[in-house]
Amino acid sequence: PSAALIGPSTITLAEFDSDLCGLTSLVCFGKPGVPDGSGLALDPLREVVMWRLAYRNFGGDQRIVGDFVTDVTGADDGGIRWFELQDTGGGWTLRQEGTYAGPGGAYDGVHRFMGSIAMDGDGNIALGYSVTNDVDVFPGIRYTGRLATDPPGTLPRGETVLVSATANNTSNRWGDYSAMSIDPADDCTFWYTNKYGTGQWSTQIATFAFDACLGITGNADLAISKDDGLVQVEAGSALTYTIRVTNAGPDVASGAPVVDTFPAEITSASWTCAVIAGTGACGDPGPTAGDISTTVDLAPGATAEFTVNATVDPLATPGTLISNTATVSPPPTVADPVPGNNSARDGDTLILAVPGPEPQPGPDGDSGVLIFDPGLSKVGVLQPGGLGLPGEQITWTITVIGGGAVGADDVVVVDTVPSELRIDSVSTPRGSFSFSGQTVTFTIGDISPGETLTLQIVTTVLRSPVDGTLTNVVTLSGGGQTRPASATLDLVTGLPSTGYPPPDGD
Image 1: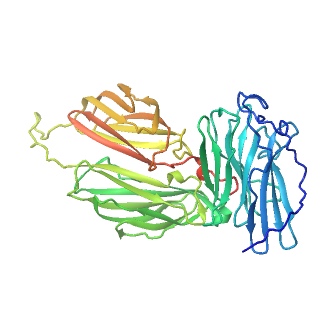
Image 2 (image 1 turned 90 degrees about the vertical axis):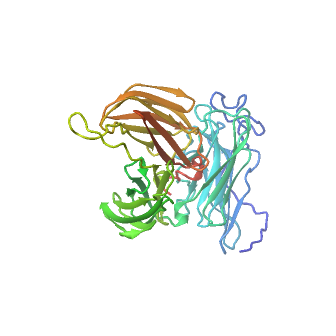
Image 3 (image 1 turned 135 degrees about the vertical axis):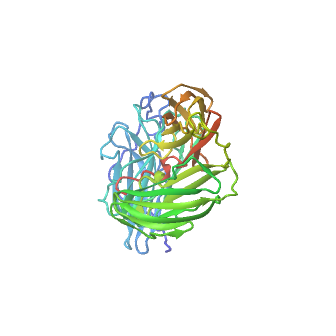
């Protein structure tokens, strides 16, 4: 729709106070170690309405939303005054306004300033802003919002932290440039940018949307696991994968897509699907040949299990890692609050079957060559609720099994941790360990037939991998044998500014 702007129009708002440490001072809002109004306290940016008015035209219903900083207590404490104007044909009037000083309504001790506001195609509003105080909140970035159906004058959708800083910036300038815009591709997705930094300025970019605008009516925490019980496999041999899809709720997930495209080293595969716990159904119970591309219906607490019978290419190259990933996705009308567990990968190292020596009679008349045949496996587990974001922990567990008829007394396990991680702690029930850069060496020594040892490395994510995948490889040597193993995790590649978690109530 087209529109003509005619004015000026005089519209009265509730009283507000632009006197924040005076009307011209560039120092006002404190930060930890810097009291309000002193030294390098932040510029409140109160001189003008800093963000443009955001205009929407819904045919015969025109809207404008805007915001500016105001003193919410009379004691130089910053909050955001926001407003919505409307014209349905009789001229512009104030539809609603409010002051946001914290999730509880009253000022909570945190300055909020330099706001940016926008409205989506359903009339929902998002408001982003900078935050600080002189006690325990370093300059950072947050947002809040409201649905069109929420009580007028309120922003009750919770407050989401986009950047939780750990240090002060080095000047009194912060967040001078920010913008909240709506994506025309779907008229639901908000894009929010804000300037931040300590010594060098950068731009934080966030994207999020209200579930109501996207047509999402439920939430279901779907998860998937995959395992074949092996870490090594011979060319030409058979594999059996077990894939389990679960729904932790709270809502039903109907028509959740499950996909597993088998790698080139798998020459044939067939699979079946059955619900083994709770209430649900498989879109294709099988048996079906080829890749998995189907759906499952799962009530909260339900589990569907896929059993895959596959054959490894007899001509596959030894040393190749057969990596196989299965994924589950929420249906279009369902949101998954924990998307980091929607992918699972199993990896096996391909080995060449080598005939052993001819069995020789033993002293008691038995035949056979006694060898050390160790087992090695590794898994990586994110901290509870983690997505693999910077600052979150990942625990790597290495399991060593003394397989074969005899033990070994020279067992060494070497693990090279990806450079994106910091090693926090290492533990072993036997022997010792040492560090060299990102490499951890476990000198285990003795291990007996049938004995199992569990080693552990606790790490912290320093930065997200470029492709979102962390692969951690470990090698065991001893008793004349060498065994590799690996574990892979798929991580979220951005900070929580990707829209996770959503505002409360979305």
